[in-house]
Image (cartoon, rainbow, N blue to C red; front, side):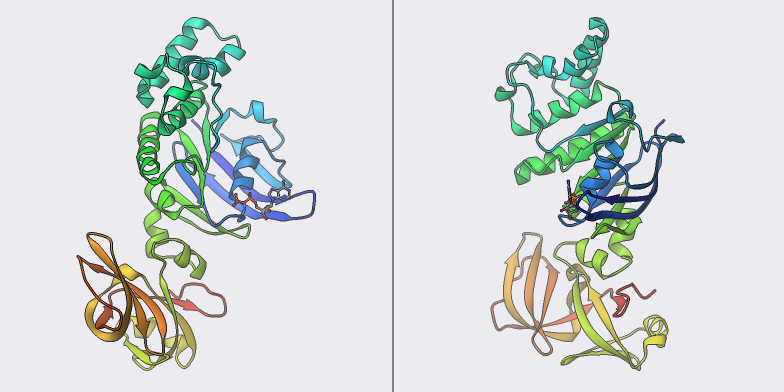
Length: 353
Ligand code: ADP
């Protein structure tokens, strides 16, 4: 079993930079948690504090109820998989995977069993006698994971493990990590700046900005019910369109356009009548329909969808993701409707629910 509890954790570096503020998270046994956010938001720092590679300035870290806040990295029973998976070039894949156990002078029979079991899980059995240089980038990444698996750690920590791989391999390796998680049923903490990785891998996502946790929840919760403008803009690609509007009776009024409100939306926004709010609409929640006239600027065909970038109202940029293959040209006019809308308070930037 491996449950992690991060309680009120702060990180203040020696130069007085506070990288993490009051981080709280209960990680359940076998859960895959993805920490996501833009570069510099404090995700690696958080992971490194869990690993024991950085001191925890304030707060507590528990593993299965035991306080390990001060425990040295080697006593934490965790394995970290880095982006730079430095393998030993002169050793075979087998020796690379066995290395940490050999160092610990583990019984050779036990080592053999563990390496074979890990190779099986990672589909590396036929590669064990090769040298790293003979393997593809994706296979080398799997060997790096194998080195962690043989140690049978309580918690796996991944720091941007896919960022060195090209796009196609990234997709494939991402699916391998998912399978690995299913097979091992291990507790995993995974850091990435890539929202797609977060959405596709996580049991729960922790979305961070400037050292603060913005929202913790399932991928669907963050996508469907973002807490605030930051999460709404960060999760989802292309990002949510954000428009400044005034709340009027039964409708929203923006610069040069209006949007009708349903009864429920009218009730929700009643406290904001006469005030301005931010209207958020995901590109995929826009379809051809009635209500909003867009002047097309560019058209990008993605195959099953088309991204149409254009201007509505008083030259406000909007992106719509329309189904199928469309061929709009610069200057074309298309009438659109918003099928789902999000509303945000402009002072707090929090979602209005
Ligand atoms: P992320 O992983 O989200 O890109 P980091 O955790 O690496 O972010 O960094 C968070 C903040 O802490 C950044 O402002 C970064 O400059 C700062 N930081 C990271 N490492 C150190 C360090 N060793 N000393 C001082 N500041 C650091």
